[in-house]
Length: 122
Length: 195
Image (cartoon, rainbow over all chains, first blue to last red; front, side, top):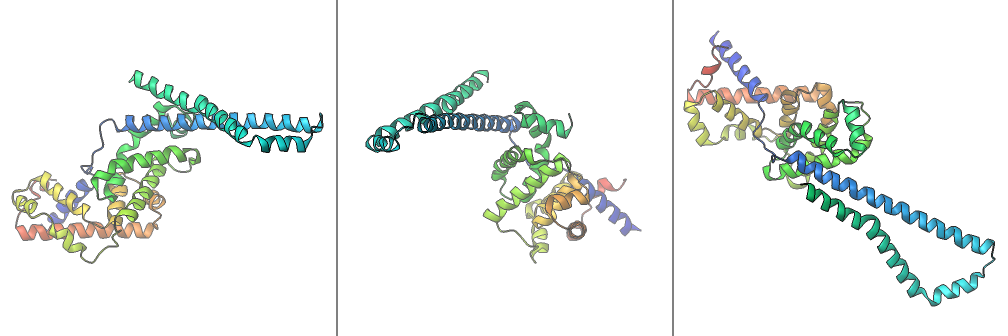
């Protein structure tokens, strides 16, 4: 009888303890911090996605322009190739600058302003 | 706001909705991660990682289970990956009995005059010394009140294994507690006598 009673008491204690939250703690503003990081990550990915959309559009337009030049104006392929090979450093350099300007305009500056505005709000 | 609406809001970029989701589920994630990962200094970082994954994978959430079950699955997998990387996963070592009994002798000295709160504290310490699988199922089933089916979904363990882990963990804790009572010749259940 006493043993049963003891058993019941141990069971009660076990049940209660198993439902007791362990003493682990997170920082007070955990949700705030995580949500803020997510927001930044979301915005960054959004801007990068937009950058690639712009890049694809510009590349597409240039490609169409070149194709039109070949088919309609019957441009001389050899001449274009020689011109490109002779000025390849200029062409590569201008492309890199163009890419950087587009990336800075569509991603870096916007992200910088986004963070700055969040900082101002906070 | 139900789970589906909340998910839609977050996917649309509503950071308040995500903040709400984190606040709502941070306790669950903390308990799952905290019980699996031993290094308490890593717990907050892993919890953050869990919510990063939740955010990234949210588009794949089909609503076939509760959102909390889905989040707990991510928390469980992230914690298990962490301990596989940095700790050795205990496979119910033979000395589990000793580990449970070893305890902190200071605590046990104090247990001579234990009250209800201290008895709980001792039991909580014993739970922390159980193998990771036991700790996990105890936390999910008792603390977070998931069903067997949900625990199975979260951990990938078969229902039979879960039931067996639960009963073995309980039996082990009970035995050790009884041994301690005998050892110290104390009545730490005085507060439970009238229940």
